[in-house]
Amino acid sequence: MPDQEPSRHVLEIIPRAMRLIRGEMRQHAKGQLTVPQFRILVRLNKFNTQTHKELAEWMGVTPATLTRMIDTLVKRRLVSRNTGKSDRRITFLNPTATGRALAQKYHDHINSLIRKRIDALSSSDHAALKEGIRVLSLIFPDSSLI
Image (tube, rainbow, N blue to C red; front, side, top):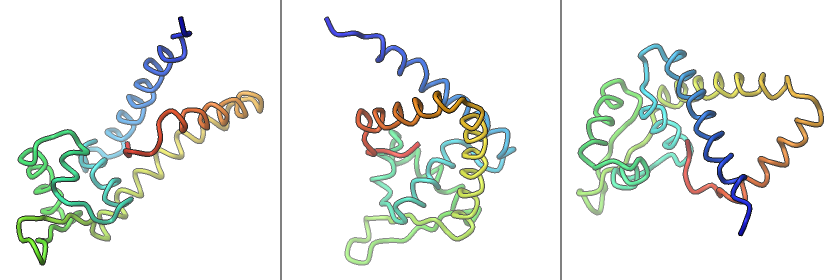
């Protein structure tokens, strides 16, 4: 029987890391962005353009639920919504310059927090972490973001 300890550890540690990131995001955003809105902005920053349908599928929500989230981001001028030229049923979503800057600000803050924790590790723990991250990237290829 294969050793199931590593999978249990992954299931315990990754949610802890995500709680830290979400908590820090909420504290730093102070009501400016919700975590789902932040995820949308980060995703749009990475891919520049996503259709409404693609983004709803990635978020794991219905198109109607995503519409409400996007409405808020459009009203705040963080995201633009454009209708397809050849098919008006398709809606394309793009981050605005303001949306890009805000997502980058929060991303940089959270990255700094994590970097401080990593910098506090011993050199051997730092090397082990790098190797662990390399292995995790093999297990979890970049098929989704945040």
